[in-house]
Length: 77
Ligand SMILES: [Zn+2]
Image (cartoon, rainbow, N blue to C red; front, side, top):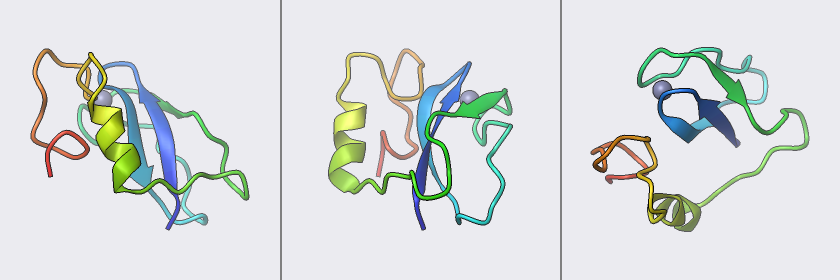
């Protein structure tokens, strides 16, 4: 399944695995806020591995947008 990149107003960017046939999320699975997909579906998706998720979490701002790292992927394991 491809991994899509979403932008949540509360949590910031996150990745969500979805089948190509699934409609894009309009609600954040963490906070329920509005999200929009950064990468269009169809053939233009990017599949990311564990390495990409780890780098995603090493930014100065925690990946979930809170002051401390959360326990959920990609912050935790
Ligand atoms: Zn959120």
